[in-house]
Length: 100
Image (cartoon, rainbow, N blue to C red; front, side, top):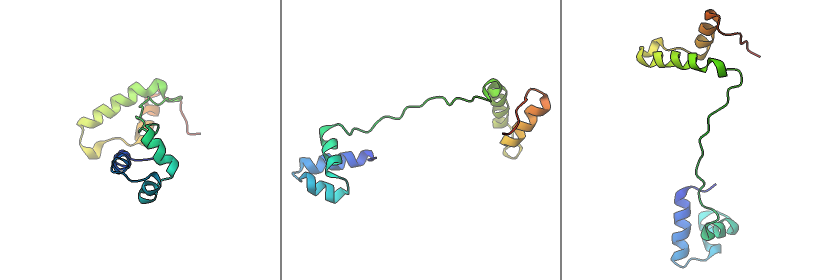
């Protein structure tokens, strides 16, 4: 995968008259990859963000998010670890989860 600045360097070098083979050697990419960049096929792809699916935690996410929002206001040393959140949910009786 190429970084965005590599696309610009390859296009600039080609515009300045450098051959595809020379670009490939200089920037350590294959001639095929250089051709893709010059054709526009190799445009950097935008990252897509998607929400992660929590099969087991789905119904408890609201409670967990409330605990974490309380932690933002508390001093750093008093924040919850993942294990502490798990123990707190078990103690409330709202969680029937166990580790696999």
